[in-house]
Length: 70
Image 1 (cartoon, rainbow, N blue to C red):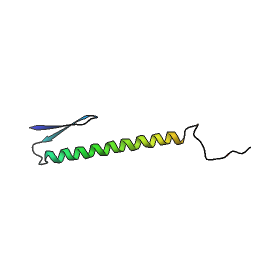
Image 2: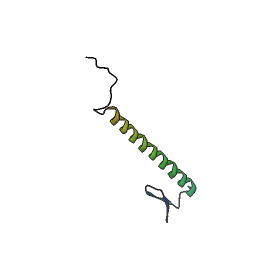
Image 3: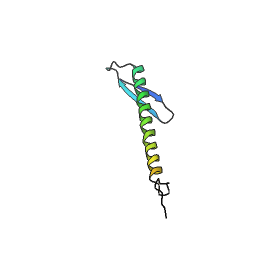
Image 4: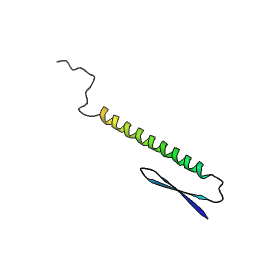
């Protein structure tokens, strides 16, 4: 027999199926899923910020530090 634990998040719904033979508690699984979700969101935000800063840094109209003297 298989039990399903449904955890609702704002971005998506995650369904965890655990077997009856495993002695892992539901509280431990929910905490593990919550920490994994926070870690994945942190990775996504850091990647988005890195891409944004790369676009700002290498933008063709970005100001440069070199002074051109005629």
